[in-house]
Picture (cartoon, rainbow, N blue to C red):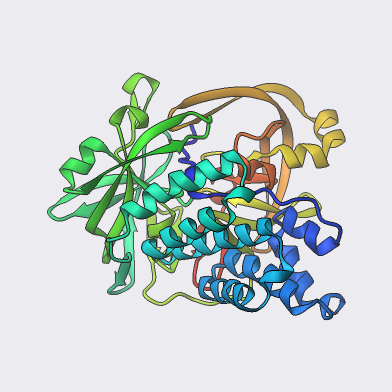
Length: 422
C-alpha cells in the first residue's frame, strides 16, 4: 500500500510552451540534470545573459540553492524584463513564490503570488489561477508564523518501526506525549489527523483549503502549527502541518490508520538523514559532503537521477512508497520493450481520499544502478497514464523495494545527493 499526499495546490505549475532550442526543450521536459550540464558546456557559453539567468533561476531552485534562484529572478525583473513574455515572467514569479515557501518565508510567498495574480494573472489558465488562489489561502494563513527552525544538538539515532503497511514510523514528541508518525520524503507537507492535532496541542488555524489526493479527489484541509516537536535529539520549531479529518487517513474500513506524517519540509531541514536496515534513522549534527550530486527537488518533490537498465533517468523519490513504479514517460520511451516482455494488468493506486484503477504493464525484471551498486527488481508496474503532473515528467517513483536492498540509505539536503551503501 502506498500512501502519498500530493498537495497540488502548493505547486502552481505552469505548463511550458514548446520551444525551439535544445536547452529550452530540457527545461520544458524538466530535465534539470541535463539542463545544469548544458549550461556548463562550451556550446552554451554564448548564451545571452538574460536567457542564462532564466535557466539558472530554475536550476538553482531545483538543486535547492533558493537564494541564488531568487537573485537570478530579481535581476531579470530589474534589468531584463522586456526580453520576456508575460507568461515567462509569470512562471518566474511562481518559482520565486516556491523559493520563499521553502525558505519558510510565508509572507513573502503570499506577496509574490499576489503580484503574480495582479500583473500576470491574465496569462494563467483557469486551472493555474485557481491553484494560485488556493495556495495563497495557505500562505496568507501562515503569514504571521515564524520560519521553521531546526536545532540538532548532537548526532541523533532514532529507532523506527514499520506499520501494517510496511511504512517507516518514527516517534515524534510533542511536549510530554510521543506518537508514531510515518516518515515520508514523498509527503509534500507534514500531515496530522484532527484527533492527534488535539492530543499534540497543535495550533489549528481556521483556514480551509483544497488538497488533491493521488486519485485526483479533492478534500478539505486546515493548517496546523506545532510550536515545538522532537525527533530524538532534534528539535523542530514552528512546523507546519496539514490537518485532515481522521477519515481521510483511515484505510480498509479502519483496519489501518495513520496518525500523522513527517514530510519534506521537516526532513529537508535535518540536513542529512540516514535510514538503515537495522531499524534506525540517524541524523548527524554535521552533514557530510560527497561528489555525487544526483539529487534535486521539483517544488516539494524529491528527485533522484539513477541508472535504469542502460539509461540514466530522473525518478521521483519516496520513502513512503513500498514499491517502485514506472511512469507513462517510461512506457512511451520503451513501449516495444514493455509490451514484448511484460504482461498487461489492472493497477490500483491509493492515497488520501481513496483509490483509482488504471491499465498498466508489469515487467519481469528491471536493473537499477545507484551509488555504484546494481540491484535487480522483479515485477515492476509500468503506468500507461499519468495520475498527477509529476508522473508526466519523471520516469518513475523510487520506492522501498529498491532502497532497502541496501544496508543504508543516505539523503543529503545540504550537498544534494542520495547515496546507497551496501
